[in-house]
Image (cartoon, rainbow over all chains, first blue to last red; front, side):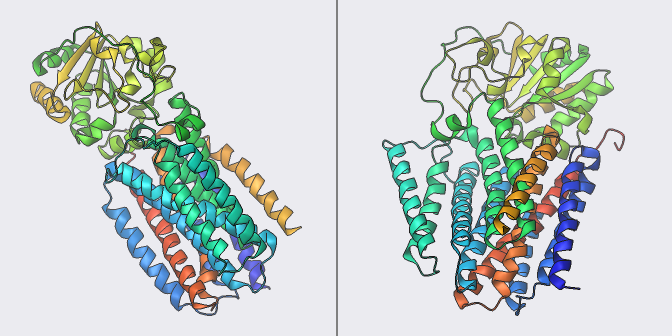
Length: 454
Length: 94
């Protein structure tokens, strides 16, 4: 039988395995096996690709695989769970780079490149390039090697429009003469990388979850484009699955912030509007008093934000959760979709601290029953529990869905001091009638409460 | 005709992707993304040909770099996803 036919049949099997794998991600109970199925699918696809008759020399393939496997395995083992967003940003980037390079190399492979192939090659270079440089900037912002605030300068839109025009021009010229040495090709390459940078710098810290999701999607689309360039089905199938996944997550993130994607991408957030100034008095509480209230509580809900991860407080939070449960209270962890720095980040951090996944609840599950919660403990979250989003039409976050902790019987807010959150918005929650501020390092405060129980 | 065929596959896969992914619960969105990173390493299947077809030196260099980048995604993506998913425990497993 024809070997290329066999390879294509193998691709069908691996596509089916990818699909099953994603389906099993539908529940935490089956997710791990799903990931393994997906990996098996990848193994089959890769093995099938190696049978290609066009491959005459395996030497460099082996070099590439060994180098990549060492880097990938080391990174995946060493990365801290708090640093997952940075890791995913880098993976997005390397996916983009791979597709860019495959597209580019295609031009060296064939003597005469058809226009359709040329267009897809350029798309692979464009999307791959944007993904690569954009992801590096996103990584820089997340790891705070770059300033994480939005960078906006006068004439930015005009500059970007010119950039797009130049890119289009270079693209058309490169399509007309698709040779690997064409200066237009280098033009497309350089401008794509620049576009990636320009696309991410105007996006501020709080919007990074949207950017990572979007770049995740691009890395899939780049694989798709490369699939078109080299006529490979499995690249198209797998690439579009990833593309769809990224788009869905982007959409969820945007909805959770009540912003349109255009608004996230093109407006530097925060500087424009200022909500009502809030007046009132905050009511601090001591660790000891917090203990007395918690001791009597029968329903406690933790609302964690990225601040909890920064303070490395998740383990001691879990300890307190267990003590409260032992004390007869119902304990849950309510997680806002944009809490943390990427979709689902807080869930991973709590899972790492051995919180069973049944206790991790979503915003829409907790809000209808928030009035039954005796104590809501807000740790390192700010904007996602800010009642201005519901009440103050002038607030920049007005309309954003929040966890309504202010409607719980008592709210503890753990906070280092009275500084405002990532988006620089005042939070009337801190001045609420039923709010008590537990000032200090979150980890120390919780440890204090835990030892009171002891 | 080839173009139409490939586009056909593209459109169907996108629809399938939307159906599948919208069923993934929020609690697994981070592993979903790193798993997607791994899947986008499928470019490896294309990179082999670029690296091993005995093309001009520049082409081989580009292809080999592509193999390395894609392998980072595949190996790193699956391993880190597995590491994360292994931490999600049910109450029963205690």
